[in-house]
Length: 103
Image: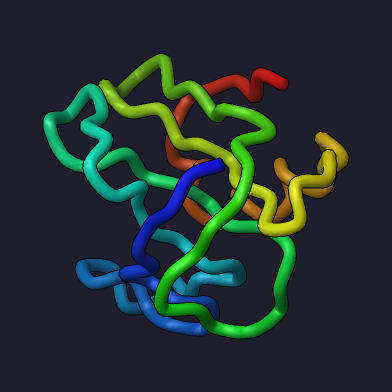
């Protein structure tokens, strides 16, 4: 299980691209550094409500081949998430990168 902070709750706009609205909660795992030197980013599945924090299980990883970041896919209830669901929900942002989902 991982714990973290939601810095871009569901329904909010991207801080630099205001036309991009987050259809799911997005945040980071506290005290875990990623390849870019910042805390590990996560897409959070399992609720349709905006969150401030989360606790969940990492069930997949989206690896960006054209960036230094991986995005962890976190399930709040610990259950598996269908690949099609993950890809559909993260495409609002990941469509701009070349990557692959690992489960």
